[in-house]
Length: 148
Image (cartoon, rainbow, N blue to C red; front, top):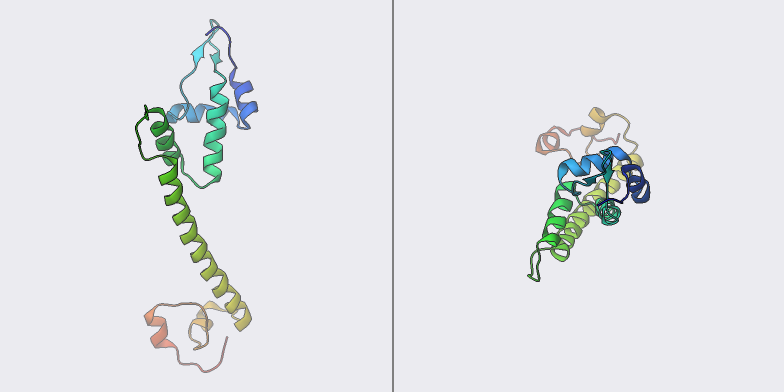
């Protein structure tokens, strides 16, 4: 390859910095580029696409390890059905929905703590109307009859 994109051009086109580009190379997410006669890295146009795919997958919540697995699965399909994006997307969606459920519970509990006037965690934990879900030990120690 006598022509190609240099590191800065690829990084700029993909919206990443050069350190990210090199890190992805070291992780094996991006193929090592050819070198010019002067030793400069020369990338093909597909490098920009791969970088954009990696960043998009990260925004969807995939870890770099998961992205590497998806890229690897895509490279080795050869017409065979292998667990790819559909399966991984279903799994990631289930994770996201579980996180949303957890965050919804946290939000409701924090709102209830604000509504109850909780201002001191220790004092609130001793109150029978404290909305913060303390463990069984805290339940046994609740004896005050007033709210926080």
